[in-house]
Length: 158
Image 1 (cartoon, rainbow, N blue to C red):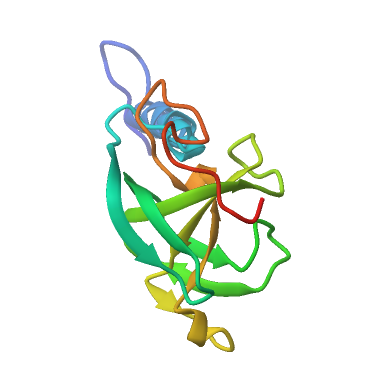
Image 2: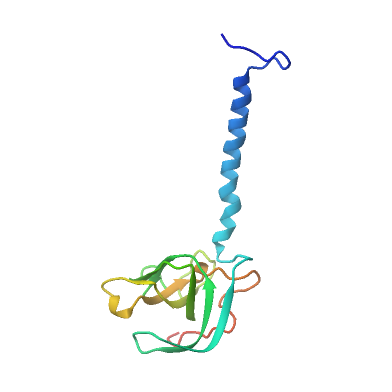
């Protein structure tokens, strides 16, 4: 035996079903709205270009300019390509990048990759201390900034 609301003539269960459908619709909308944050651009992101600094990788390259940017965590590749061996992993979300190069297209919609030192080096390339490339989509640059990051030099091996 079910009861009905005397004012509307509807059972209370129907009201909960409608509410449940509305919540489910909202839950589907949230990932779509949040999806814009993964494009490698965020208006609240910060980047600082620094000159007269010194970085040296394990291959003998030295870099005197860098950009420190908010970034996503992820894999660091030996070359600017997803089929390249992994040399490291970036676990921090504010990192230093020392130059840029062109490579395989990626989710960022371009072919720009940045050279950086991973927070963790991976075997069998641990001797390289995690140095390698990340796609530009990993950098969360301020709105209006395009890749390659202005003022950051191109890597010497292009």
